[in-house]
Image (cartoon, rainbow, N blue to C red; front, side):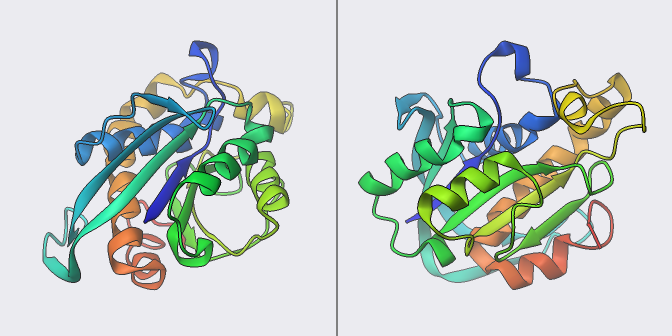
Length: 212
């Protein structure tokens, strides 16, 4: 089983903030693949389903490739803890779900203020780069050796602190642009699950929406 975790803060107050883009991407992935995120389990919104193992490229490259297995068993998790307690929800899920190897089967989707707005960066492992959600997950599972998809939210102006910035809503212009960028990020999630991290990195870490 693969498990995808979209990080954010719970409640309507934070739904449109920059810190919640990971949750929004997983919500979009769920819609694209017909997985209902309606269960309340593991202190999270939770859904489980099977997705066809067919990798769609970006809109500029619509070719498809069939993977070895006809379908993948995927669990989606959007923690309803505060961001800095995200690891509690994930640990609860890992105790109950048949996730064999977090190195290959766990993907965490997060915001990144060190990336320009809308850029993607996929990594197989790494540090938290100051992200409290990633930090809590790594601390609680005892490893940072898991895949992550970072979505750029841009750096604030010098007079705006990082904490205030991540808890601000996107601008109207940014929200309009997110209508195109969130679907690409959700597509990247599918590519990571189906193709693997390295092919997905080569495809989405550069070019339009890429982070290189």
